[in-house]
Amino acid sequence: MKIEVDLGTVQGSASRRAMLDLEELLATRLLVQGNSGSGKSHLLRRLLEQSAAHVQQLVIDPEGDFIGLAERYGHVVVDGNRSVADLECIAARVRQHRVSAVLNLEALEAEMQMRAAAVFLNALFDADRDHWFPMLVVVDEAQLFAPAVSGEVSEEARKASLGAMTNLMCRGRKRGLAGVIATQRLAKLAKNVAAEATNFLMGRTFLDIDMARAADLLGLERRQAEMFRELQRGHFLALGPAVSRRPVPVVVGPVETQARAATPLLTPLPNHPGEDARDLILAPVPAEAGRGIPERRVPATPPPSINQIFEQIVRDRPRDEPADEAPSLFANEDRERAYRGIAFEILSDPDAAFRPEAVLYQDFLVRCRIGKTGGAALPLPEFKIHLNAARAGVDPNAVDPGEWDRAITIARQIPDDLQAVYLILAGAALLAIACPSDADISRRCGHHSPGRARSRVGHLEKRDLVVMRTDMMGGRAVVLPDLGWESLPGHADGPAMGHPSGVAAE
Image 1 (cartoon, rainbow, N blue to C red):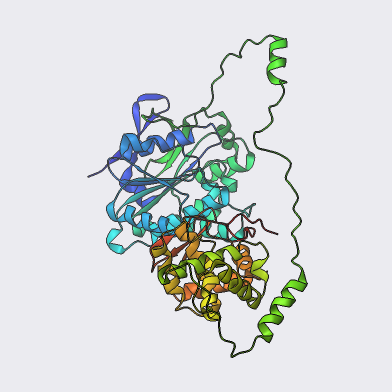
Image 2 (cartoon, one colour):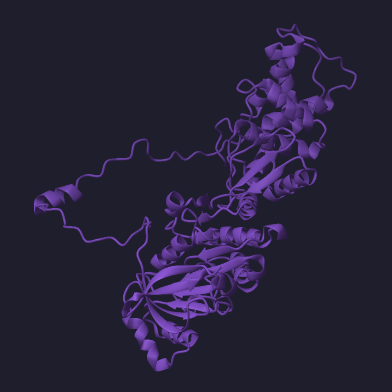
């Protein structure tokens, strides 16, 4: 059965309808060209509305103009600001369940739009063979996703997006994907993408290079290219096996849904007398609440003599010196929590993370005596696990001790050089805060090498202890599979914030 889509009327004949063969379109693809204001998006909307009941659809929407299709025709709006894994999974479900969707990219910058579109299109292209159902894939502003030359975006993002668009137009037919691409300028669209279309709808354009390419695609003489400047809004020249074997002028019909960003209309200016307008605009600007001159803090350097004294005490202490047992104010089950609180208090000092472990250990023993925790002196290996837990910035009095014990139990089975990094990531996930940056992890571990912290995170990933997820905005979140925790996204290249107790970075 032949299914045709009503685009509108043929210019000059109100009774003659401009019909588009949908099955032929699925096999031959479509290119729409027109300058801003030519009615290009209106044409795409007409095509989508008329074919919504007959074929599955996907719209790559960089400006959020087509989300109105959701209310009227049941399209699912997919926010492009998601992780790569999320977009791939959603795209696979779209193909599997044959649900029409709109990929809304308006919240992303240009480079992130290209990356998100590439991930989604590649996932559609790589779907299982059992899910190769016919799908109309409409890409608005295609010159953004398949640029002819490099722009301000990275070369990696451009290649990924261009490769996905090339797959859609060149190899998508066998997988049921029919590309419908729309562009403001043919000269900005990659030629290998535009050349795969055999149906054309050319609207108003003014630049000579674009008019010449449009005339070539329609088989017109160069002297006839001037006609593209005279086309009215919503008027197109159509050619192709799905529309007409010869160029035919088409007037696009009305649509049922509307774009959110319509062309603004002129409205009367408010009647403000001169003096009132001056007072209204030049009134004193109120000071922003809470915004003052930032205080410049000079990090205090710890007196070196104190460290030398502590190191000397630990180094010269006799091996067989019996540990003093002071009277205890704690029961055995509370002593462990007291140790964690003391270690957390020690690392609240902004410079404590960079002091030798021997110095921190001596400070810990002194505080234990002052706090009368009682019992034998905590061995150095046990002190290290409490110290690493304190580097995570988790106040033991502010969280469920049972939950934090789960993370510490896993950390005890990890090599010493990975314990601190694991607990720092686990602490961010437990507190549901942003994943710390490499510089922040490095500072908390007592060194100034973000590369070393990045390497430790990589080792944890190889051991399947953590999973790092990157969203489309470049944010990095950590997932701990053994604990079922996940942090909020943070920037891996962000500054070092120091201990979460409120200490600022250097």
